[in-house]
Length: 468
Image (cartoon, rainbow, N blue to C red):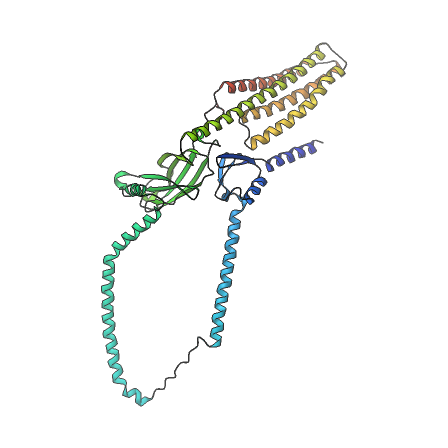
């Protein structure tokens, strides 16, 4: 029986994990979710979310690009398309080769070599003219080599000029996203001497094709690799508590490849930190921070944004307070039932009541309520997994309390029934009863105090509860 119960609990836990509503995303400034894996796949197939969108995993409070997630298999689809294109190209090349072969076989590419018939006498007659021709070829070859040498010298003289023009054109192409003023500022940063000024870095925020683009420029001429850490400032984000991304940037003569962010990221302020990943060429240790900046992304910091943020915070605060009120109701019910069981147990022992029906009445009333508590703890656990609970520490305490209450009530039932049979209540049994009661009530009081403290404690500006 116990093995079957454990299997049912295990299946229930696996079912919770499989169907956890853990995915959320932002579209048109509205927060959608949470959704299960299958629901997200359906939305992807209906093109409600794109490869370039960001989605939030509420299990670890991390954001991911849709294209990064295995459940969408976008990479697999791209590989299949590339394989198909490669296969078509191979077929095309085979067809061309086959046509060429056919033409060769037909004789289109054959030529008839002219048989050279040399007569010994004729050869002797033209021997001297041949020597004269060979001498003229040597003179021409020497002249040609001289011209080539002069051309090489001339090319070497103008090479730096062409290289400079090519570099400028290459830079301008990479900076094409910037406007004229930004380009001037970018070049001024790139022209600074690293030996004199140290590392100088500037980040430009641009918008293109419904994407947010961060263009990083620096005076780090050597090819170095940086780590870019993008952290949303929790109190400023609309529709989410956090947003974190880390990626590597490789420089090319002071230019870094642009960072592209989809508009599905939360609107708000972001701290962008650049630190060395591989900076040995400029003698900087790995992990050393070389730049940090606060930028507002995905919109304008205006009155509209202020209203959106205030509305979002109000929704979160309301939900947090409703959650605390619910926990207070659960605790009140727990305490009421424990009080009744403790009182009836003591009455049976002290008054030496030998009739079990008085105890059975109250214990049988506790049994279905205990099962309801079990079910409720499972529901709360699944909501914690999917990130739908603010006060997850209270849920953990409630689960511990539920375990203690079941253990305590079961021991009371066993002890009082032993008393009915023997009319004996040993000192050891009394001590154990008191010890289990103390543990249960200490946990009850601890949770009640924590709830009261959270009610009095102001929430953060983004609605999240303050934690000690």
